[in-house]
Amino acid sequence: MDISVVQRVIQALELVYAPDTPVNERKAAESACQQLKDDAQASAYGVYLATQSNEFPPMVRHFGLQLIEHAIKYRFSTGKTASKGKMSADDLLQLRTQIWELVFASWTDTQDPQYIREKLVSLVVMLIIRLWPCAQWADLSAQLMQLYTQSDVRRELVLRIWQTLGEELLVYDRDTIAAVRKHELTNGIIGALLPQSAVAML
Image 1 (cartoon, rainbow, N blue to C red):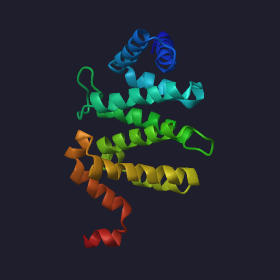
Image 2: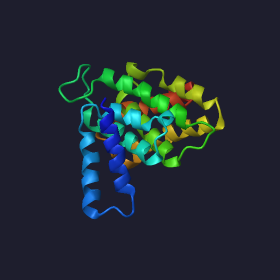
Image 3: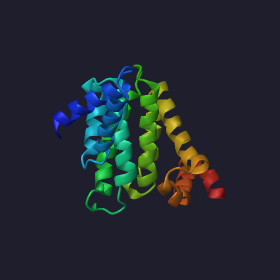
Image 4: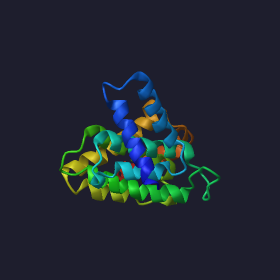
C-alpha cells in the first residue's frame, strides 16, 4: 500500500467537503476519489482509512468504508481463485475478518458517528449475502448470539444486522447476489431465528 496515495485521497476529500472549494477543483477531487475505487488494492486502502485507531476524520473513515463496499459489490468472484482484478472467496474471508475488527471497534459504548456504524452493518450484510449459510460462514448465528449477550450496544448491532439482511432480501432487492441466493438465505434466517420446534413444523 502506497502511503502517498492515502495522503492524496485525504487531501482530495478535504477539497470535496470544503464549502469554499471551486467547482472545477471539487470535480477533480471527486474524480480522484472515484479512481481509487477501481484500484486492485481498494479494499486494503479502505480498511486502512476506516480503522478507528488511525484517527482519521469521520469523512475519511466513511470513504474507506465506501471503498470496501465497492470492492465487495463489483470485484467479488464466486470462484475459490480469483480471475484478474477480482476477489476470490478466500480474499473475501480475509476481508471479513478485517471488517469484523472495524465493527467491534465502532460498536462499543464509546460514541462513533451513527452513519459509520450503519455503513459497517451494511458491509456485514453484504458479506452475509455472499458467504452464509454456506460452510464458509457456518458459525455466523453462534457469533451473533455471542455478541448479543455482550452489551446493549452489541445487542443493537445484532438486531440491526438481522433487520438489514431481512430488508435486503424482502424489501429493497438491491443486491443482485441476494436475489440469486434469496431462497437459501431466507431458509438460513428461518433456521437461525425460529425455535427448532417451529422449524420442524414448517
